[in-house]
Length: 531
Image 1 (cartoon, rainbow, N blue to C red):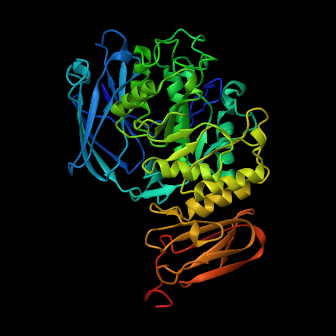
Image 2 (image 1 turned 135 degrees about the vertical axis):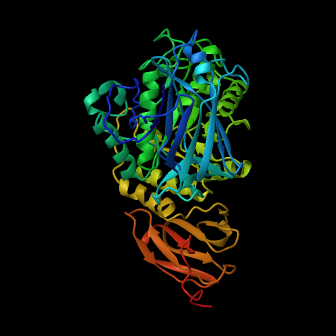
Image 3 (image 1 turned 180 degrees about the vertical axis):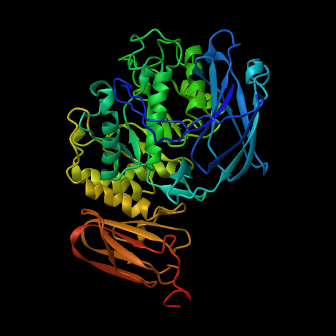
């Protein structure tokens, strides 16, 4: 029997604790379609980026470990410009599923393969199934797709299919139950907790959320060390709640950042489950790619303290295998590892400087960068003011990301979350981090980013009553606003500014940011006021 479902992400679900260190999730599916012929799925409909489509095939003829059965689905766009190949995943009770997220409007066709060729397993029940999909533009102007990159800046796919550069900062949220919410919450508390996590990220102005390591929960729900279980197969319950987390966050315009592993001192690695990139680990990697790969809204770091237990070549093998098996790309990183097979450069160490961020961005202009040691509130002296200023400094370096949030030792909130949200409003909600922005500190007595066409500038200076702006080569007269970055977001109109040298006098001493240019706004009818 064949079924087609749509992932809707909105209905009530059964809830249980996910992981000992707090990974939670939510997902729901619509009703199965009826009247479908055995070899045909018929036509399905979706919109760009969401909802994710899902198909189910009953298959009671398989032999051996069902997690080792390899069947693929190939999706082809009518233009011939895009093809996506994804594997099916075992869903229990003699059923296999596969998924699709629309990345291009128009008509898609698909066919499944399980004929023993191209790395597949021969299985007649899973082979040769066909269907069509119509992907329409997304009517939600705020809809987002997959998190990706432009050069060394993070970027998000938008409702119109364009890429919007964004600050890539990561946030470890606060909730009433602390951050180890997996063990300490009852199932009926789940929605309250996940809502608190989302509200905490929203209040503090972050769009990427971290909820602790999965580690050996990949193999056994709630397991931390590889000595806490005896499984060599992926745990389907763990994945159910992971995908619920991903979908719930994505519905709220956020993305989940996953740490796959920890350190070997605590046995938070795959070393005791067949070894790094061993057969059980490869089985797991294929399952991640098949089950989570089609879902937008997540990124993955291989783990922490990697220098203690995994080599650069082993990280390369992991990333290459994941990329080879995922039909949809997701940003992969490995803290302290920088091989070209990784999508992101992730750095160890706490409380990095603006100079460190600039150096990293200059050294590699083809990948985004993140300080991933976790500069959590009050950890190693990372106080409120330090956090606020470095969220800005890392962005002003050219789009470097940092990792902030609640420290696991005490779970304190930031006392002034509104000033962190000012950063989000200034940059992401007003689309002010542009793809070709680069550092131009020679134009100011503070920090400056500008576009290559000299139509857009962002300037930032700390503890000041004035900012000097050399806009001599600016492209015509441009609007300008100033924002006090130590307060809740409020724009002060200081434009239009003409080309030339300026000194802006602030109404009071503070840390100030100035945005010069239209940043996607429509110019006034008839051109610039000074034309």
